[in-house]
Image 1: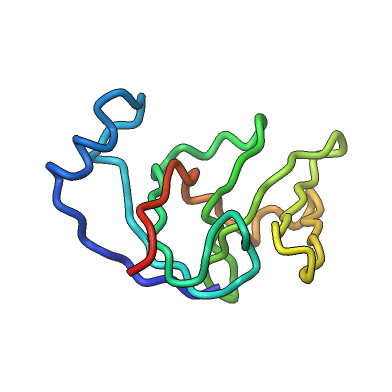
Image 2: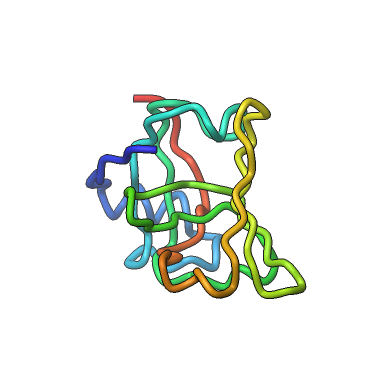
Length: 118
């Protein structure tokens, strides 16, 4: 996946998140490139993620930094301490990151919304 960081007016974020527990100062907008999360997230759609919301214990869709770049994946914590990176598009296989390899990735934040296509 490739991403482009975008600036969004704080007033727009405040209107989107007035009833959300997310603090607008911690929200980052990214432009998605790729189809691995379709139909949930569409190519060129703007997604919003809350930086430092990195608790994967309850699952969700997260932004992950890897040695090949940023990924957006559904994350599942396994009983053995490994994590599964899941694409919603069934044409892509899931990837398991073993507990011993977790230092090769960084969870940057949880996806909390999407704005739409640009």
